[in-house]
Image (tube, rainbow, N blue to C red; front, side, top):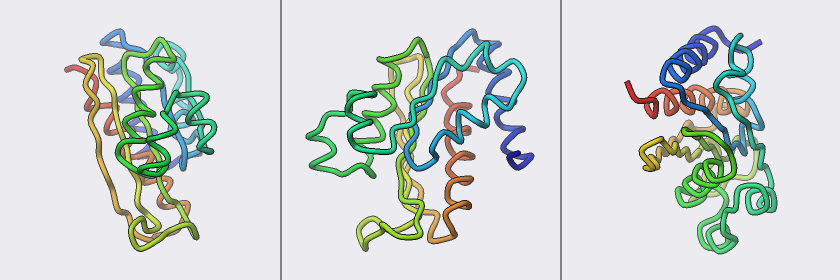
Length: 164
């Protein structure tokens, strides 16, 4: 269902997380569950995927992940502080040792000069308690392409968070 390169990365994430004995959770906004979908497409994923949160609305981010309302009001849903709060909230509300979050503007509308279509913020919270952030500006390459690039980036962040 997904491109072969995404399936290959997801398979590596599953294999490495299982080898390290780590559980994963996802916190997704603009990808709407595609990251969890990529992981669950791999046989054996139930050994490492604890849960996925699809928090498309601000209310869902607050209620399901504990993102502080003041963070959303001050910085907006598409921001580094929100991505970090989403990843950390997923860790606090799951059994996972590693979490990844994504929040962005997939378009075709919804962008602004400050936050254009294609802007996506990611965060990965690792077993060491640290949260890494990545900002990508994919450009207005189309909704599907932005979402797929976001899945690739998120899976790469998960790989980076798994201790070698």
